Structure formats: structure tokens, C-alpha cells
Length: 585
Image (cartoon, rainbow, N blue to C red; front, top):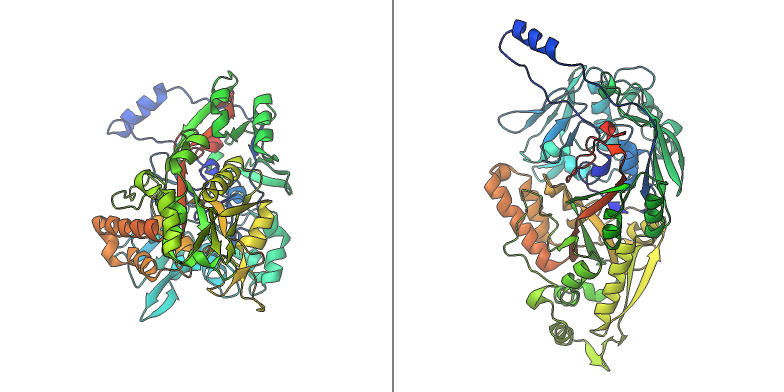
């Protein structure tokens, strides 16, 4: 499972919708009419069939999206609600629920959003600006709501963190009003969805009732807001949707063109590949070892695409992890012992680039100069790594590093993901060469999520969360976890949730005041200057590549296979942004 900072780009295979790009021809109405009369009427595809997306990743946590912290949950919800915008493969913003681009005041403090007037809830009530205002003010910003991204909507005023102001202007327009400048706030306010005020207000202040509310957990309120409607969810088996005949973008085109859309959870990569080859599923990601085989199959089309994600070996800085990880030199020695070239060639078969930063190469904010390149060239050096351990006070006996006794660490990942399982094997092998025994724990995603990622202060009554402060620990102890993270390539500051001291998804407990300060600087008037913003991103990237909250491993290149009768696909980083236009030939 991939933890996702944002639903856009990090869940690109789910991103709906498509807007016909058009313009007027000529300069008078009479000429335009004449030209239009000569154009043939567009023929739209026939609605037919069931699209089955196969996955071996873990299932979602919840369909009550404000409570979600995982990518699968956000991906499921996105079938039923498009959101305000999406991105095309060139990273251009494409409007969805918005009727026009967001208007930003000259001083960068006021953001005006205007939504379409043809959006409706399932009971026929129009979606209004007041629904958005209520969702933010009374739910996302509320003390009783465990929303992971609250800090994205706070600003510091006179040394105190306060939520930005939000207000309705009229039925379809609302504003965010800031007192301080944040150049990337534009991307933040398009991240999430909306609840119908007239339905959710009865749950306000009661987290248990909100969490258990049937209409929120079965998405029965979503009306015409997305291309598909929820049918059923059989946990750890399948998520089933049906075509939404009322879809706001399908009024003229008749989209979407699949009668049903199913996400089918298969137990392993082998099962996923077998199902795709047999035609039992329509689409699935293809592991690197299988790409050549599938490219030779006439009934399968394979698309290779850049991604916004990376794999990382997260270190546990909390009190139930190995104490040695609190020493930066030891973290560097660990990273120095794991070959990224071997990882990319033996596991990804070349379908990846080595990672040293949280910002992927497709991002306009990617900076390479100055990064500490642990795991390649002269910084892949096991002898030097062993010497660092000895310099830091560890003994070496019979080829084993001693920390009182033989050093033994655990590495955890979700079972069924063969790439991450293989990374764990590589970590185990590489670290054994410097005298560290590594125990692998391959766990179901829900077990990993609840027992290893969520944490709380021992003895407290607080609910487990991904970051309950520096004294919090997970239910089970761990040392390293192989994870997949994603970065919003246009707004990388959102990754502060992973790497800042109070970040909502900082489950490893990493803390560096300089990193905190730099992320804060991104969200100031200073960074309106794009050159300055790029400079700050470079400093963050360099600092994290040296301080290592985890060992950045690889930027994978994705390979996705489709049955050859699927039409309308546009390969690219946001492949799927137009998925409601896909159809069967």
C-alpha cells in the first residue's frame, strides 16, 4: 500500500475526468454557425462491459474519506467524486467541479473558488458553497475530528497557529482568506472532497457516530459528482461500482462507458499477472520481471509511465526502535551498505532511478546538485560503513557488529508486494555483509497499519494515530519499514507530513528543527519568488539526503498492462486523468 500525501497525481490511475478542448472559429457568429453546420456530429463510444482493475496491494481502511490515511481509501472515494480539479499528463490543471480557475488576489491572501451550478447530492439538493465551508470549518478544522492534514490549513500569527478563514460569498462561490502568504496554498485547497452539510451536521462533535454513519461509509450521498456509484465492498476481495447515468460530465457524451468498474484484490503479484494474462481482469500493474513477457502478448498493451512516488526504507526514531538510528553517522553507514544499483538492476530490472530525495524527477522543483548519494559510487562502501560503526563505539567480533550482543534488526513491509518483499531480502543480504542480522516481517497491510504505523503514548487514553508526538510508540516494536511514499510534484511541501516533527504522517518519529524551518519557509511570502522557492527545496532535499529520516531507495517507473480492447488511454504521469472516457472497442 502506498501512503499518499494527496489524491491528485499520487493516485493518478483513478483521476477522472476529461474536458473537451475547444474554441471558436472565425470572428462573427454567422461564420461560426456556418462552420459548425459543416462539422459531423461526434459519435460517442457505446456503454458496455465491466472494467476490472486487479491489484495485490492492501485494501482500503474506510470510505469515510476525512478519516482516511491511506491511498486505497482515497482511490476508492475518487471513483464517486471527482474533486475540484485534476491534472493532465503535462501537469496542467484541468477543471472538474470548478467552473473557472481559482482567482488569487494580487497580495496572495485571498482565494476565490467558484463551483459549477450543476452539481447535486443524491437527494437532489444542489451542492453549494456552504457545503464546502461547513466541511472545512466544522469538520476538517474541528478539534474532535482526527484529520491528518490540519496543518496545511493553519498559519502562524503572532507566534500562534490559526486556521485560515473560509467563508461563502454566494450559493456557488467561497473564499479562503489568509493573513500570511503561502505560495502553494493554491494546491492545498483543491486536495479533498466535500460532505453535504444537511446530512453530516447531525454528527457534528460525535466522532463515534460520524465514524459509523452508514451514509458516509457507503458513499450514498455522492449524487452526480463522479462517474461511478458505489455498489458493494467486500473487504480484501473487491470494490464494485456501477456507471453513474447522472454524471455531470456525461450529459452530452454519455460517459462513463463501462457499465461497471471493479477493483479486484488478488493475493499476490503472481495471481495478478495470471489473471491479466488469462483475461480475467482488464488492467493491472506489471512487476519488472514480467514486463518483457507481457509486451510479447498480442492481447495486452503495456504502457510505461513516470511516477510521482518513491520507495524508502524508513528508520524508527521512536523509543521502541533501535537506539542506534538516533545517530546520523550510523544511519549513513546503513545507507552506505545498500547498493541502489543492485536494487534497480536486480529488482526493478532497470525500471527505476536511484532516489536521494523526496522530490521525483518529473517535478519542476527537483534539484540534484548537492545531494548526498548514499548507496552509489564512492558512497556505496561496506568497509567504510563497518569502520563508522567501530568509530561510533560498536565492537566487531567474528564479522558481527555487537551492540552488547550481536546486532539484530527487523525490517517490515506489506506481504504480497513482491517488489517490496524483494527490497527487504536485499536489505537483509546487504546488511549481513557488514555484520548485522536482519529479521524480515512480511505482514498484511491492515496489521502493518494498525500495529506498526499508528502510535500513541504508553498508558494514555488517546486514539492511535500516525504521529502522536515524540513519546508515542507503535503497538509492536520495529526498526525499519519498506514503504512507498508519493509527492505532489507541483507542491512538494505537502511532504512535510512525512518529515516534519509534528507531521501528521510522520510515523517514524524523525525530527530535525532545520527541516521544520525550511518547510515553513516554503509557505511564506519569500517563496513567491520561484527561484527562491527552488533554492529552499534544494536545501530541504540536501538536508534530508544527508540526515536520512530513512534511506531513499528508488523512483520506480510504472508499467501497466491493459487488455488490448481498452481504448482512450493517454499514457503519462497522470495516466487515468481521463479514465471516465475509456471504453471497450
